[in-house]
Length: 307
Image 1 (cartoon, rainbow, N blue to C red):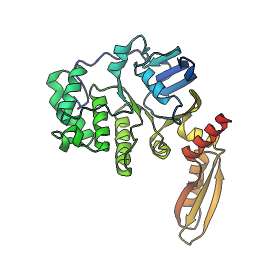
Image 2: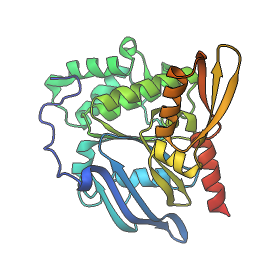
Image 3: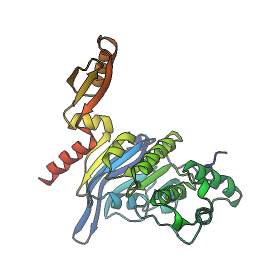
Image 4: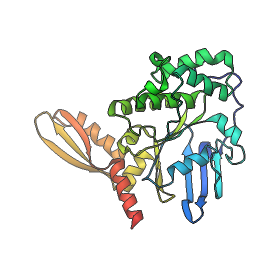
């Protein structure tokens, strides 16, 4: 049994449509006259690292709270691994790990006590606690901090502890709301590595962040939100190429020469790289994209939506 496998884990939920981990259709959430979600549609493939991008107030946290069964929608349909969170909250919480934007840690406990408290809350069999906690702390890089008080940890360590808490019951789906918020560059790089490692373990990961370059490096799929709606969604590479109108690349060679090329998509980019590396007599030393990327795309789309 792996460190994350839990004896007596819940039965596998019904298979969602079209191999989707999450399916949201025409979702609305209103607070009086304020509209937080306005007919939102979203599909998240199983096994993806899915980035939800949007400015403050776009509806990302509201969406996550509904998926996690903490908030009921005003109208619309939601399926999380084939389950409706509003009707099957207990079942959804068994297959989902939720890491909210707030750390939600108890500073008067040490790391070991903190995780044991939540293991009991998740009803993880007590006989598995020692091996489970050992494996989780190794996974998130906190093994040496097992006896440290939570209030002595850095913000990055607290974020990793919160992630360990979300993984205690070996969920299929992870919802991470702004996990990189407030982290220094080293901690963000460590988080990115950890997310990729979790993806190789078969987890579907949904993550929101304002640090767009970090999402671009790690996400297989993205959705861009504005004012409670999804403006676009799909594989990250396809969206970037389709909506940014292709891409411009610069090749630099060992003799000091350089040249720029326009390509329409990743297939053309790959073909160009092969040609420059194998057919060109010059030695290729740099091949980079100029501009574009998620940040430029995000700004373009949200500016258009505001207009």
